[in-house]
Amino acid sequence: MTTTPPRNKYADFENLRTQAIALRREGLSRRQIRDRIHVDNNDLLNRLLDGEPAPEWTKRPNAKDDLREKARELRLKGMTYDEIQVELGCSKGSISLWVRDLPKPERKRSTEEASAIAKRGWEATMQRRERERQDTHAQARAGIGAMSERELFLVGVGLYWAEGSKSKIHRPLERVTFVNSDPRMIQIFLAWLKLVEVTPDQVRFYVHAHESADVSGIEHFWSDFVGVDFAEFGKTTLKKHNPKTNRKNTNDAYRGCLVIQVRQSAALYRRIEGWFCGIVDAAPLPDQQNRT
Image (cartoon, rainbow, N blue to C red; front, side, top):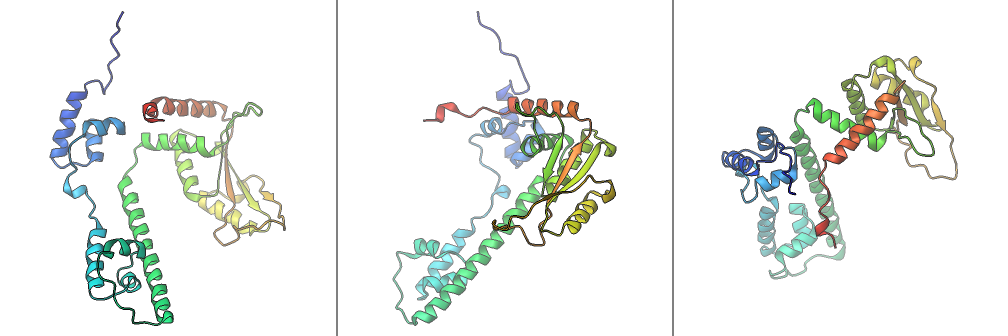
């Protein structure tokens, strides 16, 4: 006996594809199309837009095309790889690929002069890479935009299941405890606790720090960050110093860890576990057919 599969919001594929293509041809980005037709599955969105080119405004220019042409111009003027690297800030490996069919210039400098030029070229390359890193970071950050409550909710569940304490078979303890050294992670988790209606009086803070660090400074840092008087914190836990270990985190950026514990949180823990299982159920399975 054949059964009819249940309909869902993605059942009418052809209708969705028609809408997606029409929006693409109007010049909308993938994110804009996703929000318009309410498709949260990236694999499905890829299928809906299959064969439709992206609008020009969403395409990033290939800066290396211009660099390649400039490198060839400089090579034809007799410049060495090192000199071109200083001029353009790109790697000598890329330069070699771009100009290998051009005549090799006559060597006119001493080994010391060539070494100095090579050093400046490497510095220029590192500066270019840092600019590219900063540009990529800024573009990615700007691409996030505003976050809906649902998006924050899902981020928070995933964040807790990755970083929070979990009940184990050998240690069954259903309590919400989150430990992290990154203030940005703490910021997200506190915003998430507020979203799931955990009240401030339910939250207790503790500090974990290395005993050889500036413990008082670390305690005041976390107290100021979360806006809670340190007198309301629990007792600080200190990690004993082992002189045989080569401890790396000794600079001023070391802040230890902040522990966030939610009192009487067994029910919340169980909901978090269920929410995470729901996310797993909703996530697409790996393509087993492509595995060898």
